[in-house]
Picture 1 (cartoon, rainbow, N blue to C red):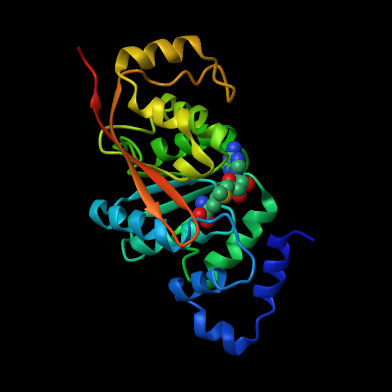
Picture 2: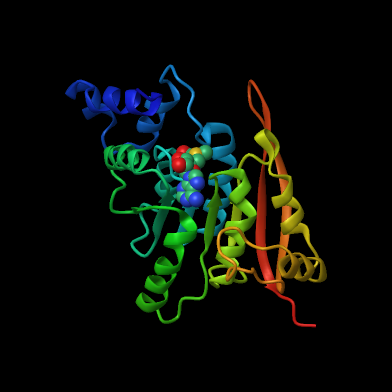
Amino acid sequence: MSKETEFYNYITTLPETTLSQVRGKPHEVLKLIDEYPQNFMNIGPHKGTQIVTRIKEKAPKTMIELGGYLGYSAVLFANEIADDPDAKYYSFELNPEFAKIATYVIDLAGLLDKVEIIVGRASYTLPAFRQRLFSENKHYTGLDFIFIDHWKDLYVPDLRVLESLNLIAPGTLIVADNIITPGAPEYVVYVNFSPDEKKLYNETTKNPEGKEFIGRWNILYDTKTIEVATANHKDAIEVTKCVDYFSG
Ligand code: SAM
């Protein structure tokens, strides 16, 4: 049995006295995951706090994450928009088993009305999601917040998907995890490209997530790698703002 399924069995069979102490309390639910004797590949409290600070500054309305896993980051970040009736968090998760566990975790935290889990490969589910956003809100111009935290070799291909679908626009804040450990060097290079470098890369590098998702060379990013040291390892998040479209 996988450690994730073991965790599901653990959390769903906790005594009602314990459940009633954590129900509707996002940070108490996260503590159950932090204190569980197995390590999970979630954002965790150190890097999570750094990202929460940026979410507080931005007060985003439409947030997405690529890679939902057990719902840890969804609970931590969607908690920041819990009181905003116009804000919503969309969690893209490939694995239906993980999505089932995340649904339970998010529900226990009292955030199921704020978070929608979209199951499937992000590059397959994003086009329909984009259609929905554009048809629900005629004035919609781009996502406010994107958390990239799925498989590292998909960071650049899926960023190109997001760019191609016009989901990234001036004002969009993108945070990517695991920049040092295990590392996402191609991603850091991509968000630092000049328009000319990006144009050349996009025209000469086929996107494995779909050749139609070439990317947008004229999107200008302002980006910074922020190191976050934890007790047992060093890692970094990449914080990237879409600042403008290059026009010259
Ligand atoms: N963001 C989560 C957190 O902090 O709690 C951790 C995400 S975990 C590092 C990576 C997740 O990405 C896994 O659950 C995996 O199934 C999912 N994943 C991998 N490739 C994906 C894809 N193409 N689309 C959506 N999810 C994907």
